[in-house]
Length: 235
Image (tube, rainbow, N blue to C red):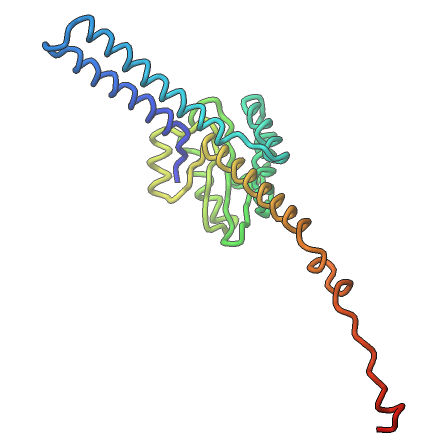
């Protein structure tokens, strides 16, 4: 699975360009006057820009976490460019732990191209982390593909915020290696946020349960002593 960090911004850009071209075609028609055409072009461009800004703001708000762990991860991710390789591996490991995965750090000499091994319960996953300033090429894909077999993993991932070259994507497609970029990391942080919100909701519901559900023995009806009237009367 390739990362898609730029799909929505690109879609907004291409949609705006297409809309502007359509406006230009409209105003270039002979039956549209110059002044009227200028008004249509200005108003249409303003409308397209406004819609694009609304979509961008909505996307930012959607991806903004609100729970403590997710906020901390998001804050750390904002400074990802200043992280060296070791700090980036720790960050990714912490992120996977926050999602509930078991994490085995493997980075260092003899890691065979695998920095982290995940065990989400459905099979081990080999992960290589690359925090480069430019899109990464084929080599990380090759290394994690081989390292996954060495570590007895069923999947191989590369995590690189800057994205991937076309050659790396082509090789990943042919080898089954999953590529994850900055957008994938933001989605994972959103997952952590959703998990924490669900836990908070469950805790709140537990606190609001009726007392008889929380203390069934305390609120159970008391057993009455047996009636011994018949014994006293001799019946």
